[in-house]
Length: 362
Image 1 (cartoon, helix red, strand yellow):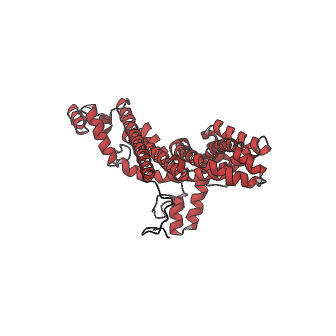
Image 2: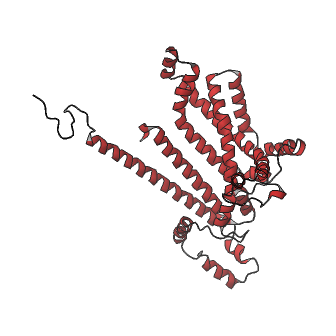
Image 3: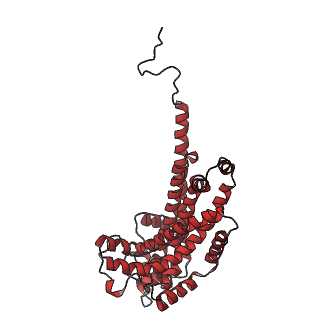
């Protein structure tokens, strides 16, 4: 006697997804997404609150920066009201939030242009420099950290530790000046300060704002070589600081994994050392390493001020510094908000990537 299998042809013993388990998984994911969005919103709100307070406590009168020292009291009062400074601080703060959310950072006193337009112009230079520096840090720092952990106590391990120590100890402005003196002034291997030589300035149409990319899109190899000769030294300097951090963290992660039981078991089973290191141990550190790389990239976006000043790099760091020296608080606060948002976005990206690579974290 045959047993009825139903319209779908499934046998009674076939396993089916438990609806309650699916619902529980959906609820966990919804709570996780809601928690991430709430954390992101609170972080951005805190960033805006800090920048708003800084703009109000700085000993710089924004009205005088607009009307000048020779303005009459009537002109001063009119500008004071027009800038909304007569309103309560709470009302000013919510107005500030609304302006920032619409991309309105005010007008720069130094350039006379909207701060948002200035940032669009200078940010690609910083992004290009930080990206190349991060890539140098990844392609040198990660293998160096892995090999140092695999050969703990060896020559490579000692070199990696010295490299990390020097990277954390040496002042970046001193390394920049020495780099310019040796590689540009004496050897002539690299281009000087700035993004391009004078003869190539403005020759490549600006599409992305990044000289290397734009010169490639234009097919102008001479401009590309010139731009590369100018960016390689400051990018290598930032890359050195990045690889010092990345190599140290990679070494620490790998040492923890190489002492785990699954690695010992794999070695007992006769698996080759390269397979143990790269196929098993390194795969397990790839998840936390993404967070390290994201934070390193964010620190280069924010911490390249001295490098940009030394190499006359027209990026966001130089723009904020000039604004601070000239009392242009709109430029300073606008650039600070952009840097803070970059950090938040990078943290969010690393968190999402963490969830994709490690299903257990969902």
